[in-house]
Image 1 (cartoon, rainbow, N blue to C red):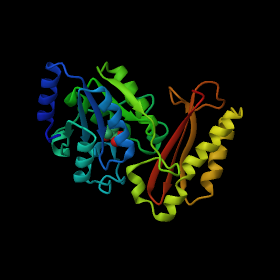
Image 2: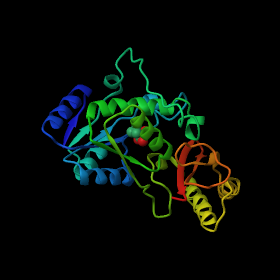
Image 3: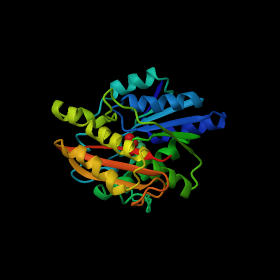
Length: 280
Ligand code: PAF
């Protein structure tokens, strides 16, 4: 596995691979890898001649007061895991080389970015769209693999790729969970032992909503209320629980076509998200 640290070197390597007719698969990450990331890397490994992963804690997707500085990092461990999973090129740039002085160009998706996580994190998806566009221009992949845990991010990036005619296939991989159901996340490590136990309430709440949906319940209010009941028994603070159209992320009252039930809950500053698709 080769580690590439500058955007220029990454782009030159990618151009050479494309000229040689290789299929490039790409998994963008912010590092501190867990089984969720590794499952995406394995999906990409199966289909690509050359597998590129990136590790970059992107400063522009964190708002003021968010956890940019505290975001967990462990490059040595990430490097070892990537190597074990068969990553060929590991792109590990610095913020200074990714955002040169005078950076003033942004990619903004306007229809799906303002709701759910975007309501509480107003610059988040602008940062995600900008950095992913930059990464795609550097890695030149045939396909990129994203996790379904970040449901809104997946939909925003699919829309961006379509709107901007970016020549890349977006492939998604299912959420990987701990044995008790908690969705894997780099942020889980900041939960206290007590909060870690309580944090399965996201999964349990979604499970309850899924059961009700299977039993025929179609009212978004009823479904969100039962998730709320489960969360409110814990010390978690609800940021949002919403039922939205699976494609356009608009709030819906009655579930008639595939819907996404998504939630964000904070445990003393640690913000966890999870979701389920209903009716697909
Ligand atoms: O999901 C993430 O880890 C990040 O948002 C991404 C897609 C790597 C962009 O920084």
